[in-house]
Length: 148
Image 1 (cartoon, rainbow, N blue to C red):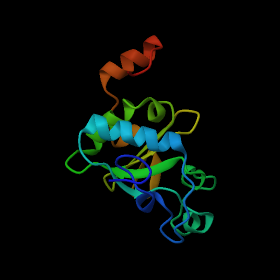
Image 2: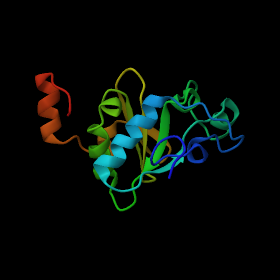
Image 3: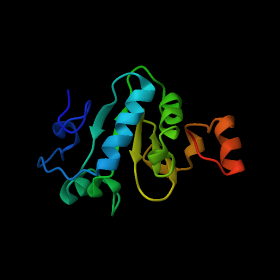
C-alpha cells in the first residue's frame, strides 16, 4: 500500500506545491497506530509543507508541518469527536499536538509538548468549542497516568 509504511505513502505526505518531503519517523509510526485503532483508512490531506506552501495556506510561523512532524487528517465515517478520542489514545499525539477544525478534520503532530486547539470560522479558540475530552481520560490525566 504505502512506501513509507504499510498504509502511508510519500505522495500523500509530500508538499503539495513542490513535492519535497521531510517527514519525521515518529509521525509515520503514530499515524499507523491511529489507523490500527480506527481499523479503517486515515486520509492525509496535508503533511509536510515547504516554507512557501506553508505561507500560502496561511500556516503559522514555525508550523509543525514545516518540520515534518504534522499531518491534517480525517477518518471517513467518523465524527470529529470520534477522531479526537482516537487521537488521544496514540501516545505521540496525546503528548504532542491535536487541533480540531470546523471543516471536519484533525491536525495531529508529534511535537515534544502538549498543545490543543480548535479553529472555528477561521479563529483559533479553545478545543472545547468543538470537542469534549472523555471523562475517563480526564480522570487518568488528573491521576497523573497516560493513555494506553
